[in-house]
Length: 97
Image (cartoon, rainbow, N blue to C red):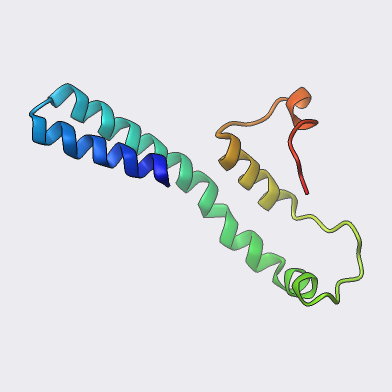
């Protein structure tokens, strides 16, 4: 979010300075960042909706399973935080808890 804000601010500053090349570059980067964010955010509500009973049980402290994970939600959030798919060797270094 902060990077998107900075890109928007950069586009505004470039427009005010009359620098078309910098404006276009900032706008392109902003659109790319928004697209990357949308890719991740689109799947989150459906994942939460599909598992809302288990999530509520976990929050309430009544869920019986020790190791509960929502794989697609985890994958989307990891992709978002790392901005790319991880290789097999990198997956060992990413905390999944």
